[in-house]
Image 1 (cartoon, helix red, strand yellow):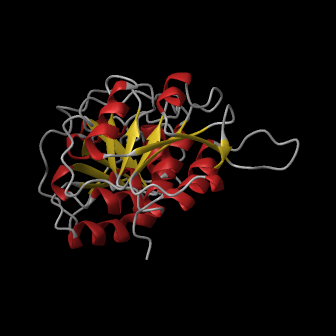
Image 2 (cartoon, rainbow, N blue to C red):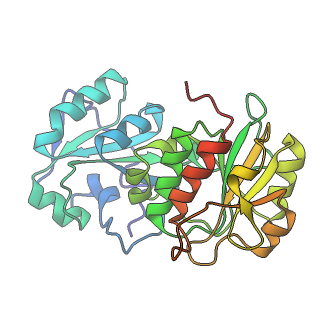
Length: 286
């Protein structure tokens, strides 16, 4: 994958009122959008790519971080309007569908991509996290490696007014293009925390903010409805196949399960998170 640090390092004076037409997919001005196929999961150095207008809207919460935007002709006017309203000075490029596909390696039927600096949206160290007020609800994702699930978890976190999502070291990157799209941009809005030591950082977060750790698991668990609703809670969901680890279960204040019909042994991790947060989130859902 191309290093885009120099290819889109300077901004042309195009702005939303003067899009630049791209006719050659090898044009160095759009090298940052090259080859964003699903098989390439590695993040670009210091940058990330967002897809769809919904994700672009979330990116425009910090317009100064956007390096460039690329839109198909059918999405051009809507994209230009959004950039203008956000006072975003990033260059706007446009290209026909055939050029877009040759450049990106995908069928860009959603019609818009944006390239932005990661730092402002990056997951931060939970040990140094300084929230505006003590968190009441944290969603903890342990070793979630499926990109769709990561995106869904951030969408669910936003829906249930979660204060932050704590990612274990092995979790997938929430700023990956598809994860962002599945999250409907909420991976840019909900605070992400990335643990370095596991599960020690979870323990430190619990002790610092007085969180009750509630792990969702089948092993040695009780029905979720049987526990009280903690004033401050960290809800843990685990790996798609292995579930919540023994180490986290051992430190949890509660291990809960979601009762299901006979013959059904588990739910998708995102569904489990939604059900658990519906009961336990202390966030304001007015």
